[in-house]
Image 1 (cartoon, helix red, strand yellow):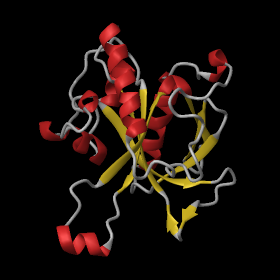
Image 2: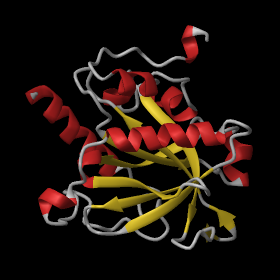
Image 3: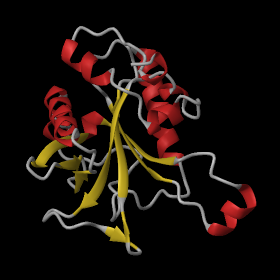
Image 4: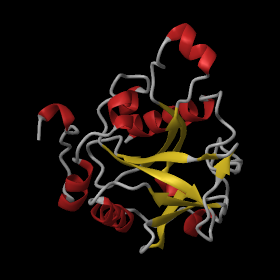
Length: 216
């Protein structure tokens, strides 16, 4: 595979994690390499597109639109053996007026959530239907179904299962279910609602991660 489409090769003792994180670069990773969030400019990211669903598997729609969520896990330090950050993004859908005035949007995706993985538990909700469950430290849960990926979608879901198995125990086991600092349990319904015009939460957690990296 051409070097341009590969993630930076981080040295880690865990061969399985290293192999999973050094896969073909996705749209979110390519966008973050532009440097909007410096901590992710060269961080390896494993990402896929999902559709938000209910616990029963019904599609969650907003204004008669299916909610597509780009979900990624990233390693913000080459010293880490497993991913430590969960990224959530959504497609940028410009209005007809702004498209005609400015042309195509500069960014294809809007990063809407950045959550330390120690505050999130990712698990398989329904393996046959390729569905995941995200449970936050606040106790709130959300459900996602992998978007069709051609013949490789089962293989891709299996890679997510491997990622899940690599992650550390969820935060609620050791933090008493307390809400994520700086994000008081207001994830909202649907998953990405509530921060559409404001990236303060993203930058807040980026700063926390940067400080942790500097002190590590």
